[in-house]
Each structure stands twice: as C-alpha cells, then as structure tokens.
Amino acid sequence: MATIEKSVVSEPRVIAGFDVERVREDFPVLRQTVNGKPLVYLDNAASSQVPQVVIDRGSVYLEDEHSNIHRGVHYLSQKATTAYEGAREKVKRFINAREAKECIFVRGATEGINLVMHGHGRKFITSGDEIIISAMEHHANIVPWQMLCEEKGARLRVIPMNDAGELLMDEYDALLSERTKFVAVTHISNALGTVNPIKQMIDQAHKYGVPVLIDGAQSAPHLAVDVQDLDCDFFAFSGHKMFAPTGSGVIYGKAALLEKMNPFQGGGDMIKSVTFEKTIYGDLPNKFEAGTPAIASQIGLGAAIDYLSSIDREQATAHEQELLRYATERITAIEGVRVIGTAREKTSVLSFVIDDIHPHDIGTILDQEGIAVRAGHHCAQPVMQRFNVPATARASFAFYNTKEEVDVLARTIEKVVEIFS
Amino acid sequence: MSELSELYQQVILDHNKKPRNFRKLETANHSAEGFNPLCGDHLTVYLNLEEGAVKEISFEGSGCAISKAAASMMTQALKGKSKQQAESLFKEFHGMVAGDSVVSDEEDASDGLGNLKVFSGVREFPVRVKCATLPWHTMHAALNNQALISTE
Image (cartoon, rainbow over all chains, first blue to last red; front, side):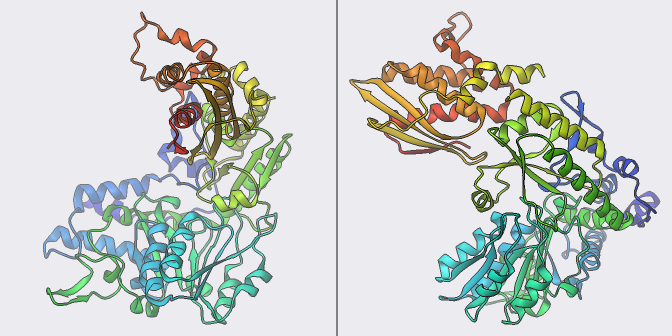
C-alpha cells in the first residue's frame, strides 16, 4: 500500500532551469528507434507523448483502484471517485476556474465544443442569429456550428486573416453586431501556430453580451491559461495534446451558463431522479457527464497537470520558442521551402511546403529517417484553401525536442529536395 | 534508404515531373473524379471509349508523386486496350501494390504489367498504397459510369 500511495501522490518537484536531456528521460517512447534511426517526434500538435509518471498513475489506478465512480458505497468505488474528482480539482487549478464543477470532463476538445453546441447553441440560437468563427479554425470548431446554423437557420460568419496567418481585428469588429449570438475561436491555430489575441476578442464580444468559446486544444500544452483573467465563457482542451492519455479532456464553462444549458447526453450519473413521467437532472458537473467516463484517462490528465507543474513552464516555453526560431531559420534557408504561417505571435508549429513536392512525399521520406511529422490538411481544409495549397508538412515541437532533432529535420528536408531535383 | 529508392525510382520521379497525357480530354465520353481525403489527392480521369476499347485516355488534378506517376503511367498502359484488358490490368496492379495478389508465381500474370512493375516498392509503404491505386480506382469508376469515388 505504501508504494501505491507514494506514486499516487507524486508531489510536484520543481526543477530549477530547463535541462532538456533530463526531461527526455521522463518520456519512455522517445527512447526507441524507427527504421534504425532514433525517433524524432515532431507531431506534438496532433498528439503529445506521455511521461512515465502519467503511465504509472494509470497503472496504479488499473491495478489498485479501478471501480465505477459515484456509485458504490464500497471501498474501491470511493477510491476511484476520490481520484477522479481529485483530477478535476487539478484541472480547476490548472486553468484557474472559480469552481471545480465548472470543469466538465469530456473525451477531448471536439466533444467539449459539441457539448456547448448542443447544450447552449440548440437552446439559445434561433433563426436569423449569427455565429462568428475564424478563418483558421480546426474542423472541430467549424462543423458543429455549421450543423447548428443549418438546423436553426442561423448564419455562420468568418473572421478573415492576412497572408501571415493573423486574424483581421477590424473585420472582427465589423462582424460583431446585435445579430451575433455566439463567438467560437481558437486560441492557437493547429495548422499555422498563430496565437490569437483572445483576451481582446473576448472583451469585444462581451460588449455585445455575446458568450465566447475558446478552442484551447493547442494552447493548454504551451501557455499558462487563466480562464478568469481571459473571462472566456467556455474553454475546451484535450488531454492527449498535453501529455495525458487519449480520451481525456475538459470543457470549462462559467457556472451560470452551464446551469442554463440543456444536458448533452442522457443516461446514468447525470440525474437526480428518473420516473417514466419525468427526469430531474443532476447538478454540475454531473449533468454533463452521462455514463461511465474515461476514469483512468482523466486521472491521467490530473497526473499530467502535476507533471507540468513540476517543470519550469516558463523556461519550457522559452525552449520551445527557441526551437521554433531555430527550425524556421534552418528550414527557410533551404531552396524551395516556404513556411505557411508567419504570424508575429506563434507557438511551436512549423507548417511548410516545398515547390513541386507534395507533403505526403515529404512525410514518407522523413519517416524513413525516423522523423514523425504530420503531412496533410491538419483538419483545417479552409486554411489550406486560404493559402492555396492542397496540404502542408507540419513539424510541431514540445519541450522535450532538441536542436539536434531540428538539425536532423533540416538535413532530411535537404535530402527530400535532392531526391526530387 | 534502399526501400526509399525502391519507392521513388527514377521513372516514377520522371513521370511526376513530366506527367504524360496530363490534360482534359475534349473528346471524352467517360470521366470520373477521384479523391483521397486523407492527403488531398484529387484527380479526374477522362476516357474516350470506342467499340469497347480505350481510344484516348488522359487525366488532370493534383497529388503526390506516387499518385501522379501512377496516373501518368496508367494512361500510357491503357491506351488501345479493351475494357476487359483495362479491368484485368487494374486487378493485377492492385494485387501488386496492395500485396493481395491471388496470382501464383508460376502463372506470373504480372508480366502483363510491364513497366508498371516499378510501383512494386509501394507495397512496403502501406499508407501510400492508396496513392498508387487512386488513379486506377478512378479509371475503373469512369469505365463503369460512376462519377465520383473516394478512397480512404
């Protein structure tokens, strides 16, 4: 029992400075070779890797604590419930929510956005209303709103962007009106790396009394998020992009808004009482968590938050910024390479194209050298259309990546150019 | 890099750079559009079928080197072939790149593939198989009067 308790608690140990080699030791997946070459994992914007402490936390849960939550009076159920609700407390502190009940556990950012679309959108949006999104949204923050507009006869408005991949704030201002009933915008573009001025955007929307949802899937792993300071109404993020297992994620919502919303799914655990005549829904957060959730994954998310608080995030971010700067410099020096997304404010996403070489071919050749990048439209086809490219190759960095890995990337891109010359 | 040089053979790189029969066919009486939503490959195959034979064939669109070269070489291989021959070549080609060939070595029906055998290296790259077969699926759809196909 003593050993279990020890690993469960895993008190954050803040490390002074940032030692990337030491941090890499925390991620077992990084030790492998691919095609005989050391793995160079540069697909972090799609999904990040999981540190040993998070893996261990999942094992402890499965070995010693697994049971259904919020149900039994028995020992294990209470233990599982404590761990699960403990993870919610960690999430609350991580994003500085007022109350833990404002943090609804979902499968990921996509499910979080869909929850708001169904719970808030379908209840409050009507014919003639307008919903504003941006030109750089992931499909997850386009399609649900399109579905809603189609159902309600509402209109989807899109904030355009410039050639650097920055939203045009004047255009946003012009789009906002009495007709606007909702704004859904990404904090950071997954395809371009642009960091949007969301605090200002939220302020502008609030002048019209319009609630704002922020898609934080790309920002939660890289930036300190304070939902009270931002004053956003909803904030969605995924665990698997911030060093936790897949199936974990959160939709934060202001309690007053969540209270007014319809439930998302119906089922067990989201009710107070059920008769064939009437069901009384449960209080927050249970109202939005029908059925048995991904208990192990969400506990893993809590452990990932502990892990993040154990490293110096400011220095980790500085390291990522340096990787981005260095990679941009190395890659743009190669003839024929063009970076897509050159905003002044960027996180560690580097999308690029090479003249006359399809990103899929780039991806295959990089893979042969052990380098994992994403090649495709990044679930952001409108972004591809805006820049008039069918797809891009995208290297996205985490704090465990190194300058040496950037060198391997640059050398291999040179090889790609050579093969196709 | 040996598997890589198997995949990106010179002849494939050449067809990628200078695709043959890369144009819209004004006299086409059959055509179909093919998509691979995963990677954004998109092409149209045009056929002029006369008396059950491929009199003219062309394609246009955008895609990776493998799909473009496969389309280019397919148009060369199919010109003058009967509908039946085109279908059986499709089967052989698919069998070769997808590794699900039912033909035994003794029969060696792959002889019919001729220089299309340069695509045999694709088999080692499972995620790229669809790139090579997309033009063929699209051609098959055009032959059978389907307007739109998608591989995923």
